[in-house]
Image (cartoon, rainbow, N blue to C red; front, side, top):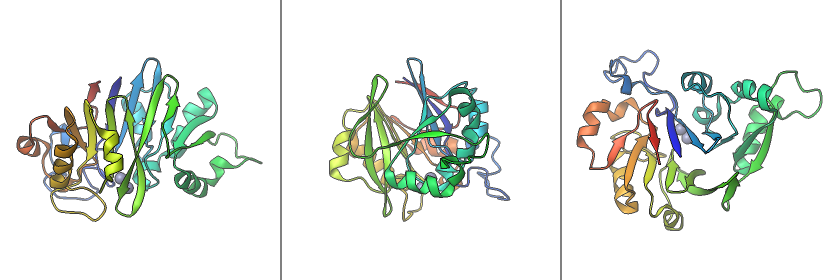
Length: 253
Ligand SMILES: [Zn+2]
Ligand SMILES: [Zn+2]
């Protein structure tokens, strides 16, 4: 299975528009972060997790010729705002399968009503096939996917486990029951927003404490704010086997 980090930044991305913060002005390529998303590929299948405002550019940059579907973690704009840009894939394959919690599907239907229109639909607008997920495991072809219910502040959202790989973004807390589903991981991707605490996101210390508890073989941090610091500096202080993800990083599991 191949994972490509399409974006590793928090909601505003890095650089932030108009920011004079040194991290936003950094010339290190790894300090340029689009909004968070990954590509998951195995056999001949390709799925995207989330579809944020940078989706179009991310698909062009990674040269993604086809997708088999989109999994949504939650409905915040940095995870869904690129939804209209799935059109080239719809022209190619017809309805694009989308997987999300019922609440997220409802929100998408409200925000992108024209996509879900059944009568007099505007020609050329995207078409999707909705799958409601969240309770149990579900199948994508030959692969079992386990949704992981995590809390993003007060909002219950989803992470996903694919075999020995798990992707958890926008996390603040995880119940003991869900932690059980995160045992024996080869690779964990988890969000770590910044150094200072935040109401709805893990900061670096909280993420490291959770990693220590879950004990995956390797961890990559994502959903990173410029307030976490320079990529090169932060990596130096991380424990063994914990790394910062960066845009366009590819890992094989
Ligand atoms: Zn987010
Ligand atoms: Zn969020």
